[in-house]
Length: 441
Figure 1 (tube, rainbow, N blue to C red):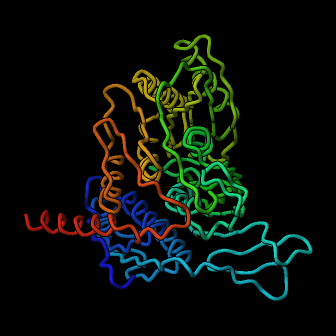
Figure 2 (cartoon, rainbow, N blue to C red):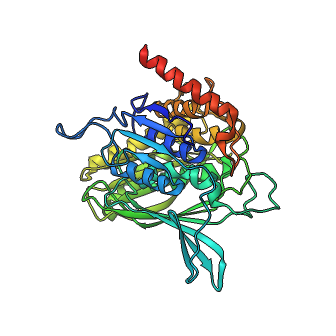
Figure 3 (cartoon, helix red, strand yellow):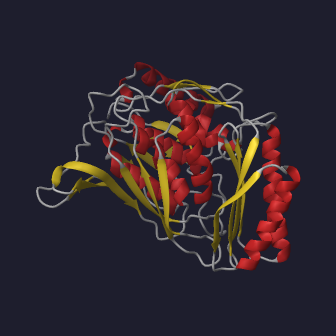
């Protein structure tokens, strides 16, 4: 590991925010590729003139610290506010669970092993926690660690019956991850979007094993800042498996609308419900409308609306709005209008994903074996977040995307030592030389 120079990544590239950091560290943890990221989040303006620009915020730091602990990474600059980070994961071989001679639970790195009743040698689940004392986005932390949770061999056990396909999960250990922070936070996906859009698409269309969520307590950035917690349960891919290519094509017709309303009182919720139904039925008179979540936020400055369109071919597209001002009749009108209008714009494009799902599929396209296709619809070009995610993949893995967003993935195999691939060594060297050339130019 010490013979490989860290890959330099300029944190100002394209979107220049936290996404670049999250994806880069996530891929580094999986592949053991060492990184040196500079000018972290430098494109993010400071909220106060006296505050430093960019750098690691609490939620970014929490994800980095967890992945560093999970991979026994050597780090430099892993402190709040840092604009430079070196991340050097240890290669495989250091992930054997440390079991206590007494008691029912053992600790291994970031994980706590939970044993079956009367079976001290059989691990039935591994548990871990990521604790924030502020309402930083739980969902963005999950975004950073999810590829590692699903694909890293430390989360699997040997199984001689493995068929080599990602669908076989008989050799894996269930994982439980509890993250403290914000569930409904500005400029971040909500836990409802994750639960109703991202996870269903990952499971049914990408081929990821089932993931369940349980909101222990909501966390808000609006109103009085409040820290919440969410529990995620999943079973990772088995050792030696690969994720097959996937195709997001032929969206189908809209068959159902899922409407989530979080508002401070029954009057506001009923008003918003009525306005949303009226707008949806005006455009889709035959569609079924369901309300999976409707809750009292107990704070007038907390208002959230999510509308998800489900299609006949199992795709889901969503648009939402989080208001951070005290709700009023005109505010409710504006929220209903904005969300339904934006969703209609998404649906008119004819694509299989909304603009916020685009970039979240890039890492799975990169890790899959074969050519994965994501149809974003007519006249819908890659978003800045998507371009950034693709750039990170190109720098680390040497993979490219065509104009239609098609990527021939690296065929990552759970348990492999990615650094053994000769083409990766060449791609790393080429990436470094290209960055030097650009900096000189």
